[in-house]
Image (cartoon, rainbow, N blue to C red; front, side):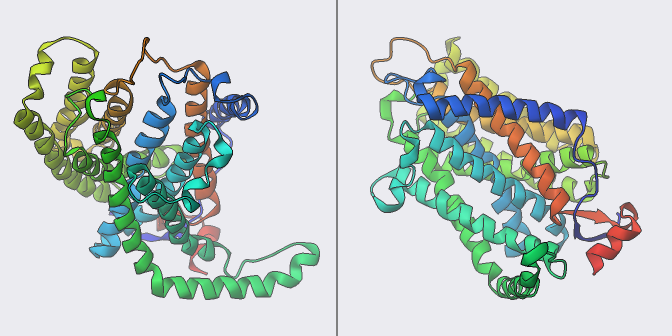
Length: 411
């Protein structure tokens, strides 16, 4: 295994053909987003009184929250359980979670008819609402994520503050403030890490509670009293696979060697967590005898089988194989199947399984909805790429660093 130093900014050209394509997708999404802000939600979506939510909730929000679970799972593993060998993947996972939750908040705001009223739950509390609990936990957790990322900001700029022109007189005070913040956070970070884990478990399960109270509007294949537990277990099981996907994609994009020793161990733990989720999923189906609905070949049964077989069973079988865990390509496929399976589960719960009252037609997302969703994903990737080039996020092996980079991270 390579000897890894402290995280360092990646020195690579930002613009590549792939990045240019992402910029085009992001700009296209922002154009439709501007139309939504200027002319209303009905101008760019197929949402109406019969179908009050669509892929902006099912995919952007519900799936985004689940796929950002890598932040709290790796933080719990490395810091709470003191598994030092996993520190190399904590900051990338934290950055992914930070960006994921930030875009989740934007997605929620865009899905609200009066988007400028997004601040209302912060002051108009309703302790009996599952959605209120989700909203408050997400708001607090977003702040916790940004606080957890501050050490990387301090590490990047301490001793290197160089404000231009008249602002140069502030170099000393800003550097002193950064050093004070860094010392304070080093003594209190454990509080924010534990808070992040607790908040994540609360709102991950509360999303399931939100669909439990939908009652008979939900298809029996997904409607279950243990849906909050299933939502939590699926998010936890997806945390490590999401870290694997992010790490392998970043390594490929930035020309780095993947840290397979760490990722392989994460894959082994992901297999165990996925097995626990599958046991509860199948056990609940047999306890409630909802397997009878699989005899009918319709959209619900097909989507349920795709979610379980392709998103859980197949990747679980792959992750149990030592050969798969040692191969970057196969490991990426297995982890990606878990990620896509969890995203499909959230879409199934919020869109496929949910039948709005008095609906006379099926919901099909519009071009504007798809464009905004794709644009958000592209923008997230672009911001991630910029962040790892500015801040010390990704740990680099000594032999991958230039002499200037080695000097920079050791200064």
